[in-house]
Amino acid sequence: MGATRRRPSRAGPFDRVVQGDAKATLDGLPPSSVHLAITSPPYNLRIPYLGYADDLPPEAYLAWLRDVWRSLYRTLVPGGRFVLNVAPTSIKDFRPIHHDLSRDLREMGYIMRTEIIWYKQTMGRRTAWGSWRSPSNPHIVPSWEYVLVFCKEQWRLEGDRRRIDIGPREFEQFSDGFWTIPPERRRQGHPAPFPEALIERLVKFYSYRQNVVLDMFGGTGTVAAVARRLGRHYLHIDTSEEYCRLAAARIRAARPPSGCWIPAPAAGLPAPAPA
Ligand SMILES: C[S@@+](CC[C@H](N)C(=O)[O-])C[C@H]1O[C@@H](n2cnc3c(N)ncnc32)[C@H](O)[C@@H]1O
Image (cartoon, rainbow, N blue to C red; front, side, top):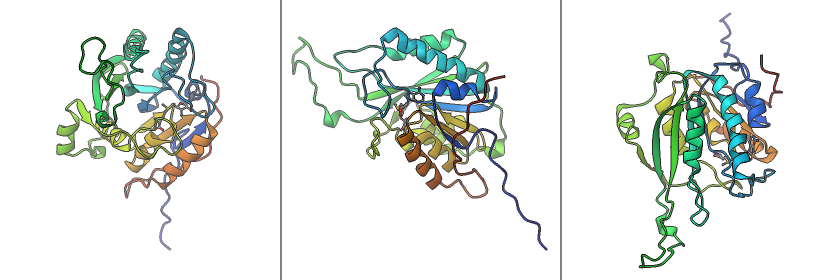
């Protein structure tokens, strides 16, 4: 009788969709277990997410996120990366929150490695000119977003060379820090999903196959779905039941590469108290 080939089991608390709070869930993860976190937090712009108000006073907003970044830091491996996508705020109520966030992260010990400009090519749909053809009050339209990249303790992420999946052309293309990628058009009922092309680049550029990739403000599950499709373990966290349901279906449909078993999502896990 031939030996039964067993699939490896899920990687601890990973390969899951967790409907829960970002900080509480991160606090329940083992230390030094995450290789790459990619996220886009709520921007405090009163965006209508399901079940989240997005309108804290500015200082309370930054303090809330500082707590989340601190909890994330503990879970990152040495050399683990944190990629933070931040959109410029609105033209009339412009606040440079990308400066506030990068200052906070550096002050708490993250090393800032770089800043990628994600150019969205949205000028065709512009509606705000300010003073048309006059220097009296012209507007610059935010046709880009920031992709800020940080790491923990060291620049280098150790890994098995056999688990690298980025090709030479891709490496050349992605290492140019100006990324032209259109915004996601299939919104699936969410106000601000990532385009998969953006996440594919980040996952291939900054992690090895079989690494753990998470998004603690996961929305519709773009990060987790792309991570699974590219053969990474994943964790999706969001407070909204509806977004988690959507994310689970998306992740399930994202088949990992052959020979690289990554389980389909299990239901959320309770967050145990950190050690
Ligand atoms: C900018 S969206 C992320 C969209 C995501 N990048 C995607 O591709 O769909 C921010 C998400 O944070 C979630 N959220 C708000 N407060 C949260 C909290 N305390 N913990 C976890 N998720 C939260 C919202 O439900 C929302 O889906």
